[in-house]
Length: 44
Image (cartoon, rainbow, N blue to C red; front, side, top):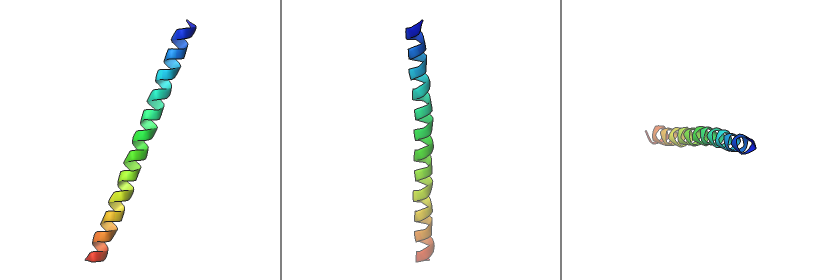
């Protein structure tokens, strides 16, 4: 029973970390995109 709780805790932690990492990468992508757009606007 104790081992089952440990495994569930590890899985839950992994899911939370995956979601957090996904949001971070998505935010970084938006930042890079906005910098690229600003560069394009400056060139025009």
